[in-house]
Length: 118
Image (cartoon, rainbow, N blue to C red; front, side, top):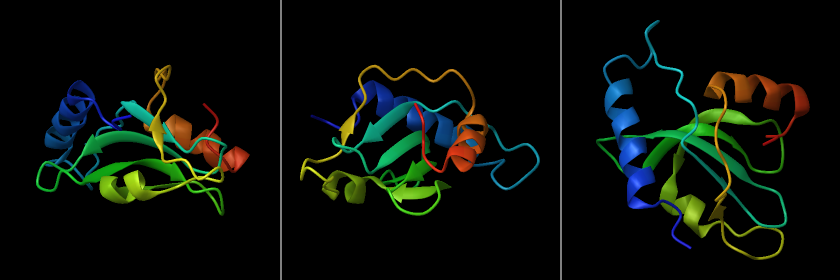
């Protein structure tokens, strides 16, 4: 399965272009996640909101790698594609995921639960 469809990739890049001039300021945009990636059998989850328009291998979002606390930050899409979960299967896209709140709300809940719950 392709991790990102052309439509999803375009939406992530558009968010990245909108975020670039305001990143790190009070005007930073709290996007809803565009896509959820996960490893079958549990362990790793990524909720991605944007792709760096200057480096399309770098995405931003909330992620949990099955140990420690969930984190907000940048991830390499090529590294996500190389990850294998507990069952030895690669990461895949959640075909049924539809965000219903901004990333900050998912992050707050994930911190409380110590996992991403979607």
